[in-house]
Image 1 (cartoon, one colour):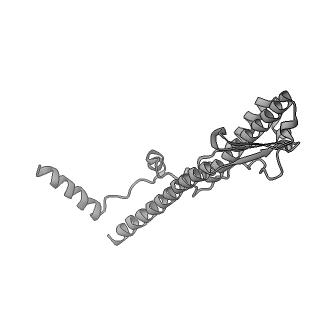
Image 2: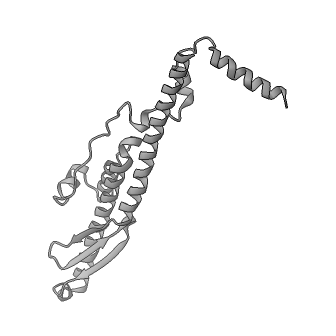
Image 3: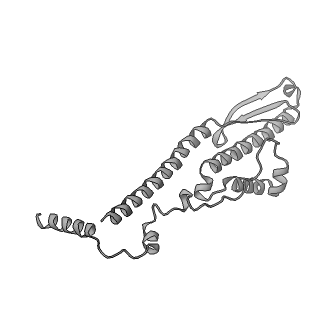
Length: 192
């Protein structure tokens, strides 16, 4: 009976460990949401006359015009504002993707940064490599593909009982503890 109890305690401890891993992953989601809410991408036009600050989901938080901007022709100023706005929103999307990748990308096998770069390159009619070469120096380049670890939350079988049952060795013959529990539950049903 002691071996059976040791096995049950070991299984319970393994379950608790996996539960703590799941809790840690979900805590990362809350941190990620806070980081996304505080996100800002500031881009300045090449002539430094227009500055756009974009927030999460492509929102524009601020638009600043220098005195030199006001000396431009209306069409030229509009083009500068629009180009700077597009760059700020694109930068915001790349930053959002980086935050998501950092928080949950590996756990769920995602690489959102690559997907955003591919979509932006397609939308601009260029290649990902060309787009990356034009990014600001501070912008991190593409993330490596996620590394899968056996203890990675996404790869454990905490929520995949059917896989565990298929891989589990056949149970040993009924122990005295198992027989006691079966009898206990059968007795309860008889008293109903």
